[in-house]
Length: 370
Image 1: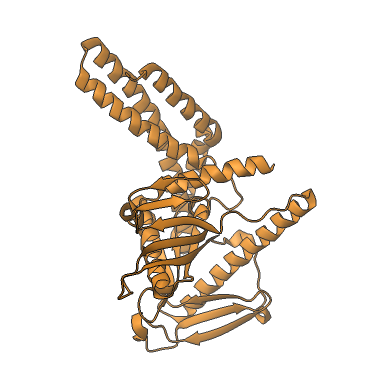
Image 2: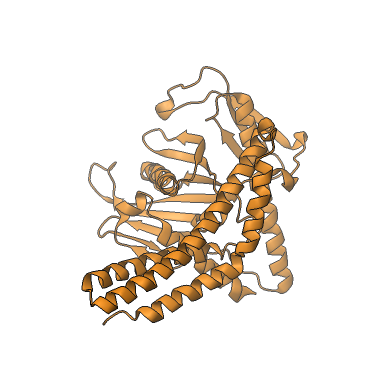
């Protein structure tokens, strides 16, 4: 059946209009002007952290506006391309228009998903912790596979990352790892990845070649900002220092620079060893501890509101995704039903389909709960 280009292009324009209504290009332009003025202040870099925040926000706002303007231009060009192809009865140009239609539709879909991220902390950078679960050495290896998967996803997007802590398992893989993704909406985007991930495969560590099921937990929290005012009294914190170590226990540091920070009232423990000094590791640990306490506070407030409304439900999807490598090849999200028959691509960072489906799924559930 021939593509109904006028109807498809009209649908694209309708989606773009709905995105504009949410993002408000005029407000975005005003924000760009404000940030450009702040970025031009001569003493901006006297405070590197504040300067980085200003330049990052400016870059993000400019990119968002440019994406919308380019999409409008591409939709217009697509209409002109279709008219030309029809006038000249050019099958090759029609095929080119078909391919561009698919590309524009996909790009609009990604941009539309971004408009669904309206949570209090969705715009924040993200801190992700991966922990090996049941499954022994296979679970530790799975945790390392997931770490690489998310780092590759961020790399594909051009998002800076920083590995804050790695705890290596004895035989292979990781007991746990914590890293930051520094990008606007990183928390809102990656928060749908939180939960229990399950791997089914022939174990490379089993000399009898048996199938093994293993698990890993993914935690995603928003990075705190100075305006959050999460103050933790020194009396509530226990700090232990130790020497950083790499795979197999091999020393990578000859001083006690690694830090383990325990929040006594809640029992939350944060370890940091990837910075060069104890002071840097302590600061990183405190930042992550504040982030976890912030998220816990938000969860408690949310639970209290649901209890008052008389609608207490279990949190969604503990076991949220399965990665099956044997006896067939399939990655399937158990909440959204989104799936891929190419696990290698998924483990190489091809996660957008799963993430976008997760964001849409979460939004639908939020609307149904209200």
